[in-house]
Structures are given as C-alpha cells and as structure tokens.
Image (tube, rainbow, N blue to C red; front, side):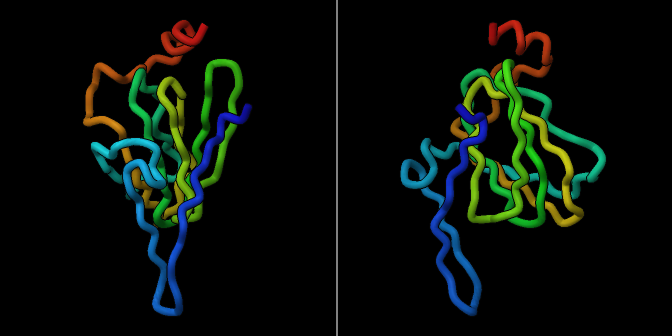
Length: 132
C-alpha cells in the first residue's frame, strides 16, 4: 500500500483563469477546522519533521513546488507537489518532512482540528516506538 494518498480536485476555468473549490466532506474527507499556509521558505532548509496522533491534513501547493517525504515507520515515499489542483492527504500517525521549496512556493494546509501541541510527535525515535 502506498504512503502517498492524493486527492485530485475538480478544476474549473477558461481563458480568464482557474478555480478550485475545497469543501468539508465533499472533496476534503473531514471537517476543516484550521487552514494555514507556509511561504518564504528556504530551498535548503527542510521543515516538518513530525507526526500527529489524531490530526488529519491535506496539503496543497497553491504556488510553486515542494517535496514531501511520507514515512509510516516501516517505509518511506515522497511526492513533489507542483499542481494547485492536487492535494496530499496526510493521515494521523504519518511522519512527514517537507523540502525542496521553490522560491515562490506557497503551501496551504487544511487541518481536521485546531492547533494542539499535545497532538504532535516531534521526536523520530519516539515515533518509531509508537509504530512498533
């Protein structure tokens, strides 16, 4: 089973531009409780390095590109996000690392819960122990 689970969003548009709509329980498989975005990242400084106990997320690179490494404690796989009509589903208990940000990268994340520091697993060794 692949660690990479994507959601292809319907894209509507014409010569005037494109539109993608994101809706809870329609094309996003959860109730969206929080939206945040990252921008101005350095191409050589990766981010992430954590998993969530319960939180589920969908990451969409709305501009530029980046790579995301997904890890379930047994195997790893990565994906390059460079299409604003494609979302990466990040399930609970999936370690993820983001890197290779283009200069113009804007990475938007839709989250199933509000921010809760207690939900984070930030130590990889602790994560591996939980996945055994």
